[in-house]
Length: 618
Image (cartoon, rainbow, N blue to C red; front, side, top):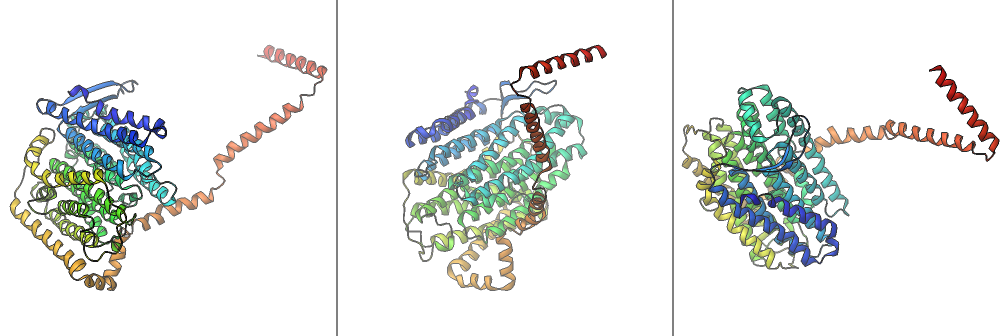
């Protein structure tokens, strides 16, 4: 079965090409069957491959062909399957299939139906290539593929200029990180002579000592790429605006593809970070700060999808925190649980948005608990998993493990642990604020549409996964330890049980505060908003802590000013000058076309004399 590995990315890639070329001529039923069915086939193949790898004692390599052969540079189109890439492949294909199934109904009336599935399938194919690549150049191809698809899907409804702007913003901001990553790849190849990931890690261990400036520089450059793709500080500004795309696109970007790519990159190159403690500390600090900054912003948003977007930034921050303290398996465990409950939350939100005739403002919702029971109960399941309902939902198990590792790991400490705990309180507060405002209280907008079987079945399956996947903790971590190193636990002054009790208490506090301010006594939140201090903080957090304002003044406006000054580009002037010279020469030559034979004969004779003279002189 392992020999079928190449089909997992090939099938959605081929289907994307067919839909792009011929989709407009196909019926919607055929487009849906090809778009969702191809991802379903890839998912089935992934599930069939899993037992074969589990019974194998070594990772599986598959080389299709040599991509480039220049001197000593010979990257291959080849795949590497181990515990980590298998987990990523399974989650990507399974969650993507469920999102595609949901999309067959959600996008049914859209005129760009076949175009949508072509983009989505290319997105999944690019992500699978990214996680299976056996060398960093092929990984970078998948990396840029998901970047391209995010641009296409965020700006899918391109007739609205705001959507095009959001797509360009995502593309440009992530290019900043991608540039850093590209420089890192050049540096790694120059220093170690290879981009094959496993050989690269072996060479790094053999040639670089701990704390080596080369290892630190390479790790920081790769971190730059990861920060851009995974929307972490300071390149997090693109993700909230990415909500301009269709809701299934948001679910795919947040749950199974693009924003988790940075987490995978750092986990896959973990050897570099163990050789560069300063860079690994930077990963932890970036994650800790991001999870708090995004959590406060999520608490103030009024758009249901933007709340979930900031939530994703915060939860990816938890994964970076885990990576930074060496808890590689914990980061991937949270990646898995997050994929289930975040896909669920976006798709359940899509049911609400469609039911209210594309209303996004949570303050115009309310009272939908009985009107939309499937959306309500599945959203509650996803919200409880996100907030970490103790001992029941998956988010509790994965997030609690990260927080405990932030304390007990030799690379952790009280400050990182406290940041993780503060995030628990914030997450519970903004999650249940969202639930209470959308589903409780008085109904403010009438339900105009009810979803069908495919959309409801998808969220029900995801709700089950969001609850039960946390119970896979022990076997999953044991499995991941075959591909990832584990940090020795210090157990300094606190037990894991005590840490879990504190997290549970903070969850309860966040739930109670949300109930008090947004359900029982909503006048309290109104009074807080009118308070000068809290009102200012609310506006500051609502605007994403002013990062867009800052970047607009530091980068965007100066660039636009330079463009206005250089409106008549001097490079264009050179090209225009060459064109004008060519036109003038043409006019001169045209003037010699008189039709008089004697002048032509004289010209030929003069040319012959000049040619003979030059030949004699030389």
